[in-house]
Image 1 (cartoon, helix red, strand yellow):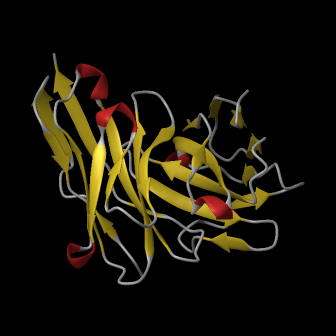
Image 2 (cartoon, helix red, strand yellow):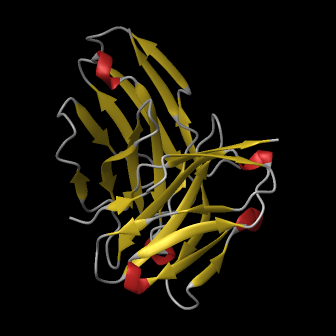
Image 3 (cartoon, chains in turn red, cyan):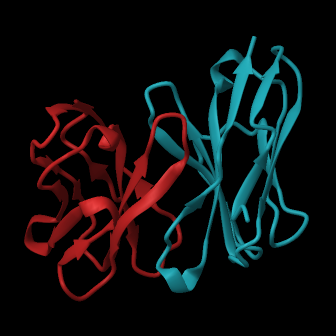
Length: 113
Length: 113
């Protein structure tokens, strides 16, 4: 069975700091990769996704992620975080041809103003 | 226009009761899901259903049962509620052509007393 690992469970940053959240998955075949964000008290929303093509994908609110196939990784980055980025971030993987996603445990990001 | 809606938003009930949570999507998607999010924000997929096939996470107790009257609805029925069922339950939908991008509902916070 495939698994998704998010290495950082809790991250605390000051505004304007750079962010990188790690995500690794275990499946070796074709995958679709996602990052979702959950703001306090809200539901999950799509931040960005990778299906194919350019391994560097850009999402909403200045976030980007890079797919490195050799490392089975899909790390999320933002050069300068804002207080409003405080949220839970979930990495998810879906094998090609499947419609069952596997989610990581999530990373709680707190940004201090 | 709400894409994925759930009712009720909050549900407080006693142990042993039976309750249902309703979910509707107006996106025309072919697959719907139920997730459970615990107090640590861990997201667990419970069911997926694409009007032909129901896939059940084997760890889900059989007190939980999904019911789909039509393609746009996937309700969750829970029998004999237990304290450990307290959580936030999210409905989601996806369309095969979008590579499995999940569209989440607003969530139902279930509290079992």
